Image 1 (cartoon, rainbow, N blue to C red):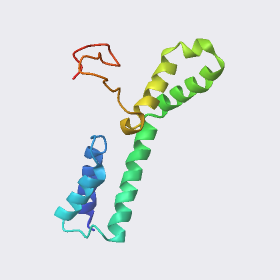
Image 2 (spheres, rainbow, N blue to C red; image 1 turned 180 degrees about the vertical axis):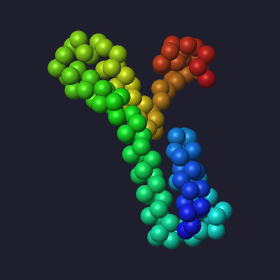
Image 3 (cartoon, rainbow, N blue to C red; image 1 turned 120 degrees about the vertical axis):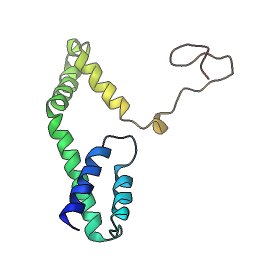
Length: 125
């Protein structure tokens, strides 16, 4: 792999890491377009390293927010006052948003006229 190819793959990883589709897929397509052997151990290792780097960069960038929310959860276990604060709610919303919808499931309608289980609207499809 040349330096140019490594830079291109790094750019693709950086741009696609936050998209709601696989950055690994984008890297594999780009590797193929660059003529690289996507099944090579060296290419697979490079992909793992740059993805790890992207995750570490996100953790470093958001470290103060992550520590603030973790602190709120720990303190909220002991303190009702903290549980009424915005950090406690935000921490649990982030945690709930991290659970795949397939595990939790969506509210189910019992009939075509049943209201939405979340908002109560009868216009729920």
